[in-house]
Image (tube, rainbow, N blue to C red; front, top):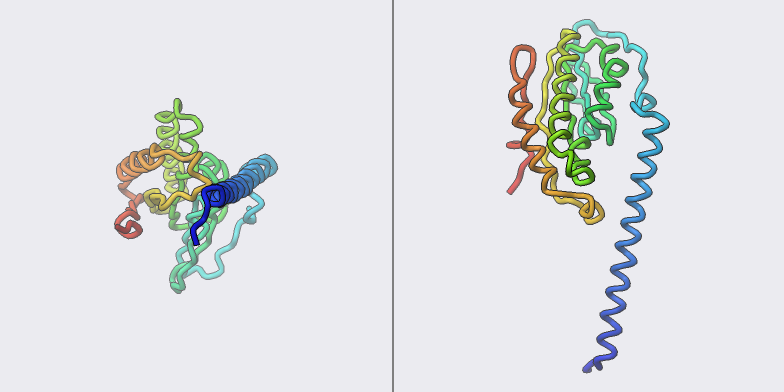
Length: 214
């Protein structure tokens, strides 16, 4: 059966319309999510409601207390079952390095950890496409923020293990309008800086060789 040109045109128009409707629904969902996160930040800027801020006493003095600290990537880490270590997760999704600094006293200092494992920075760098004129300042501030977190950890007498910022994978369709290759370039730049922080009581954990695929 051969379709007439008007029929083919109608099918094409329907496909275009359907794709447009789907994309708009997708973008609307993303916009609602961002709007919700924005107002949630207004209610609780540091995300203190995500975790108790009271000190958690050490119940087993033979264990070494380790705190996972940072954004959603840190929050997603599961605690391994190692008898000589006690793991506490204080990662919070969508948080920037600035928020991490401000909540450090509440969520890390009071726990008196021996080791702090830090994964933070990507949420700060993701704002570059929105403020391209501030690109260099954003990168410099992100580096300074990570250094401050390391210094705060060391002041507690803890060993700071700084992970390089995870490189992003495939960018979802709904994020592409707010994305830029500058983000990946900035991640590489900040990771190079993180490598310079390695030293006494500060260890570098380069995640790229483990997480990167072809």
